[in-house]
Image (tube, rainbow, N blue to C red; front, side, top):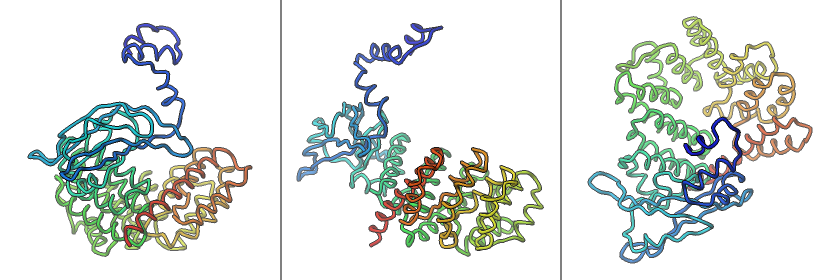
Length: 441
């Protein structure tokens, strides 16, 4: 890059100008790389495939590469395969092979004869851009020992691979939830914890079989409470676990703790129960019918700020009654006088995973009203409404309704794109739920 900037300083450049210094310093012709990586779409999936001898060694070892049907491009990858085994320092790397992967199958002869590892990590050290798959032995290891991997990058790659497998319906959502709850306490970076917990909630909302999802929410809330009690007072981890507990609370026991935090009868050392925390705990109660208008009005009076007005709007949209949902829908879809910030706050509260049956009837209304709303409201406001209100009703009828709406070519292209994205999310969720339901049989 230094050579590139020196050569072209104070001038304009083309792609070829950039590729010249890159080719010189790498010693490789990058023409094929440009065609594969810069002029194509989607991402490849890399999977380890192997056979074992009777004495537990690799008889064969290869990496299989696949692409989605819509973009069947198999790229060249430079990557490393890491083998991890249990040792005195936890689950550590015992062997590493770096190689070029090309085409549908690439043999890795260097690993033939090597003792079978507890964990096989394709793309060790994160050298390429691809989805990764884990073999069953590696998954078994991670279920029990992901927290024993001392290398944070290796753990991150394992988390990412397991999540991609969940989204692609190869790993049951309940196993993702259980995997995270078994290993998240080993993470010390707050951003990693936040990401993992957000994905757990996504899995419970969209990918888990509804007959198991309530169990999953209880597992999450119970774990959050335990971690909240164990977290360092005043730490970011304590704050994160408090918010997770509030959003996952489902039982009367959970509600009692949230009420106690709000009235001061239940405390956690070092946890600051400021206005933001109070709204989070109150919203958790409102969503499950454990608080209502009286508590919302009192909190709005207590927090008479612009933020308080927005949080109260979200809480009112969260109320689990048919009347409250109808009122919120009317306001966000048809009342053009609502301030933009309040409008967005109400959108955040309309759908809630504990209210599936209550809001299931809004699928048809969504497709009836987004066109007029799009035409009437400013761009960003309409965009937010279309995205937030897309019905997270994971049923074939949502797909059918979206397809019927999309069949009308008159709809504006930006609006069609947003609906396509929502439809694809439901299609993915249906596949994942079917996989998770199979696990429960």
